[in-house]
Image 1 (tube, rainbow, N blue to C red):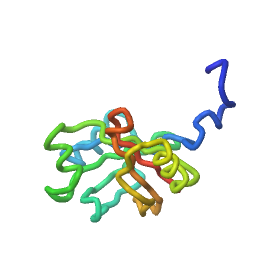
Image 2 (cartoon, rainbow, N blue to C red):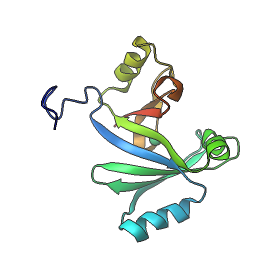
Image 3 (cartoon, rainbow, N blue to C red):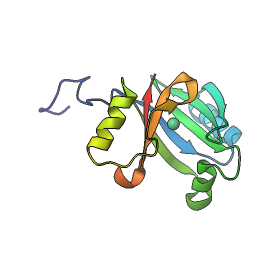
Length: 145
Ligand code: CO
């Protein structure tokens, strides 16, 4: 661990945990089978989010998840991602205590946001997405449980 900086548990500031790492896949069942057969990692939650045009499967990894994502329609953002970039890392979800406050901090620091205000996510969470162009090329999701 670092010899300088904040104490463990507070060093992430507003970011309290990695909530999930999201991977866009063409075949959700094949991806679920891969994690189960290769690593013995099991799905703890599945959900279709019609407003986002995705179906997700959450594979538990300690207190975090791998979120396997596949599109449910051809015009969804994840479908466009797969068409242009292929399968792979789609976004990182950071757990925060206060999604609105974290989103405001992004705006205050000149960041570009996708969601102007927090909105409902899967699992009953409250979420907001930060634009990858202003976040070093990685789409960020702020997740409040
Ligand atoms: Co996510």
